[in-house]
Image 1: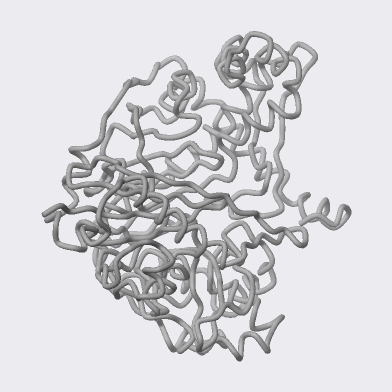
Image 2: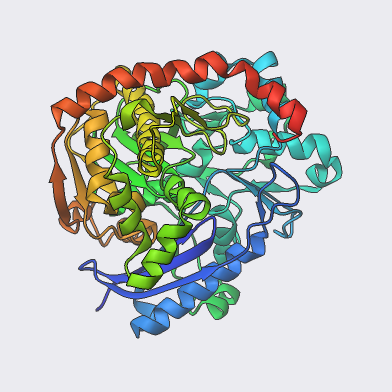
Length: 513
């Protein structure tokens, strides 16, 4: 008898699905994109049906590519971008578009929580700060601005919950996604704080029951089977958050394991058993032993995106050169950055190009290029952008380290910017810790397939994740650079603190928030 597993990940730009076998071999893969809807400044939405259609189609294509009997699939698990807010009625029909993690419309509601509940109380219960990022704040916005939809709502669902609901007919959530509701979720006891939700003015009955990430919460219905190519009755797991699934795929499964994904944003996570939560960081229940294991997460808004921004804004000559030579544009840009010395001769970038999440949680902050002189070149500016992302990572890393959470070295780097040995060494020097590159990061869909395998009982635990990871290059800190960055970091930290009072004035003048 063959055993296969399906994992899907609903992302900000598209959905990926895979079919794997018991040996961790990817037999089928599919990816489908969908539009990001931005109807107003500060709003970011998806059509929730796009989630379902993409999950259904990518699963179907993956099964066809794998050429397997769907009856041999032992489980399905879905992760997604998080947080998100989707209201569904009693017929499980969506009432509005999903507003996602980057949506900022709940600024007033977040301020109400600070003024009336308080950061300390929210953090003590949820392990998370107050911000429009979180799903409870998004639901408060719906209540205040679309009360008729709020009254009609049966449950709130996340971007992972919605396709899971379409597969099974059950409107539930998992411990990881529930964590990112923030206010109102007791992250230690894994239950809703009904008294607090009522104090906030929200109906606790609208919040879905939460389950361990790898628990079977239902089976594929006949209608969903016809749509996806899965067999009716296939077990479906509760699922998880995209970053958690990616960390599982990269082998970050044990206490102290650390991973940094250098994608468009930079997301660094540390796995820990101890219920110790770092202020101003994101806390998520891990999918591995999700009843009592956590990930402390730092999420900077601009990481790999700074390189793309430089390419599109200042790199026209480099793009022409790349087109002429056939060279990859990012390889050419990295060589350009290498022409500048560490520290960029005193040029420092605070990389809040799109506001910032951890640890400052300032949606109206913007980037600052400090120390620019006529002696600085284009290479200085580019390297300064890259170093700025590393400064932001160091700000987060230092706070997590100070909390006393166990951190196992080396730090595992994956995705995007981590493909550059130059940028990896920069991270290593900035943090002052050894780093390794995961050569073939299989990503969140693969991690979900592992969750499905554990939930189905085929894998006894997540130890196979480490067996299937392939580590590439390793890096050690260059002490001279580390010492220099330590001095510059003090200046970097002061820049934001000294000017942050001006951001609100700027937002008031420009109208951009």
